[in-house]
Image 1: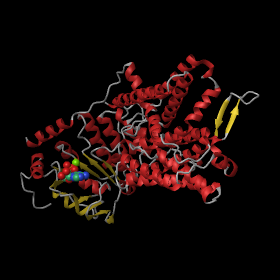
Image 2 (image 1 turned 135 degrees about the vertical axis):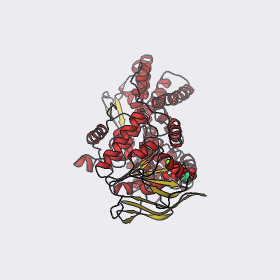
Image 3 (image 1 turned 135 degrees about the horizontal axis):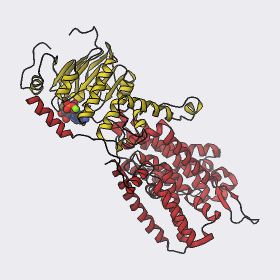
Image 4 (image 1 turned 120 degrees about the vertical axis):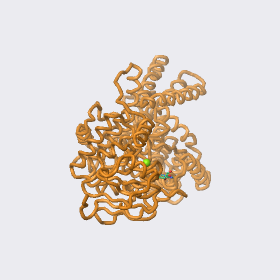
Length: 259
Length: 358
Ligand SMILES: Nc1ncnc2c1ncn2[C@@H]1O[C@H](COP(=O)(O)OP(=O)(O)O)[C@@H](O)[C@H]1O
Ligand SMILES: [Mg+2]
């Protein structure tokens, strides 16, 4: 596959240490326009650490991140979100006691127009609820009766759906998903995969971490194999089988030379 | 095939989520209603206790005079409890609230009488010092990652000792304040509605009571209708999730403790109005009484759940029991005993409501 000139999102030589554990060890990463890159790797390989560095949730000790070729520095998730990078974390990062609408707009609440918004700082609940409802319907998640119900009253699949909807609603440059189908049943996984393809068709590139090989091989344009804190190789799913991919990530088989 | 086994294993480990069905009994409906609106329990208890004492004591209790007397008696605790609610909503606790209130009142008094500072400026200084102590609590909790219990336990001792050292244990007498700096007693100013010709009976209010109600209303608005309020809940619920969702967790925590300090300083000002004098030994029970009101009001000590209205009801419940039992001629220990029962019952109800998510 020929790649367009500058990748949208790049990581170069990322290092992240937690005490004596080196979660990222000179790790590189590339995401090009309009593609889905899957990141696979064993538990503890450092996949979540990699995407957290790119989403501002952790600040790497060394290395740099480039967005459309320009070096960027994310100190908080808000910094990355301001650049159009949205992330669905493995833990979902939602406040269980708050409503769906509250969670969708957490940290970027809309205020009422006029003095009620500027002086009284009043939230525009009606508008936030409407947008939340629209986004969830787009996802076919309207089995949820009430946009004001607390997230903790939702099933695992519904929660995941809300988290994905939140990212899809606000991500303008890159959407990162950390194991979005791990807790889902077959039907719900399908929906999330369709959504991922839908987002790509709108031209937004996606980073997808997943343990589910059939899912990865179904949607990914390229597969980044992560091992021991760094990129082992990048493979084209059309050239390899699922068992090859698993063999690379577990070290049962040596990586192909040309990455 | 290796890959399929791998996938099957990981799927099984995570478990398959299902959409919940909507079969619900009456009890589950009640549980859900309380989950959405946790202030309903203390409101119910408040209304029932007013009704019971009203039936037992008749018009001695069920009169505008007695009802507003309760408001006057709970005004200081009510204000401090409103502040305490904010901290507890963030899953913290503030043991220094009483000490902050007292030192603020002492500063208002001493600045006026010892240094001859204009009384308006002294009041402002008292409010400022209260806010600063609160902000320091917040800084230690948010930035130094120290447990709120420890930080405010230490601050309680520090502030109380500083209060005694600075005031030299001196009380500023009521007559002196009345003559030279009546603004210090401003929140104690009373006005009556519907008293008889001799000025007896009728509903009696103080500006302190008005201040308490205003603080409760403003905080209720801020918590429900502003982004800051949503952030307070999110931080109390799960600080990590809040941070990842783009909430500035540290700033939210510091703002909460600072605001708590400010409101406690207002309580200190109201305290001068209530007792007339400025006394460094006043307000000793405010921290435990405020926590009591918060817990009876249905705010979860684990953070993120409950409402300021609940706290207000909680403070009123304590006031109703105190006055009602006194009018009934019961030993004051009965009040403490029943409050103790209410605290434990409130926490049990909180645990039950939390199970709605399961
Ligand atoms: N906050 C943390 N504190 C300490 N160690 C961590 C932390 N986050 C991750 N690690 C460690 O870093 C390594 C990589 O973790 P992670 O990035 O979560 O891997 P993966 O997502 O591939 O399972 C693991 O050994 C993990 O224990
Ligand atoms: Mg992970």
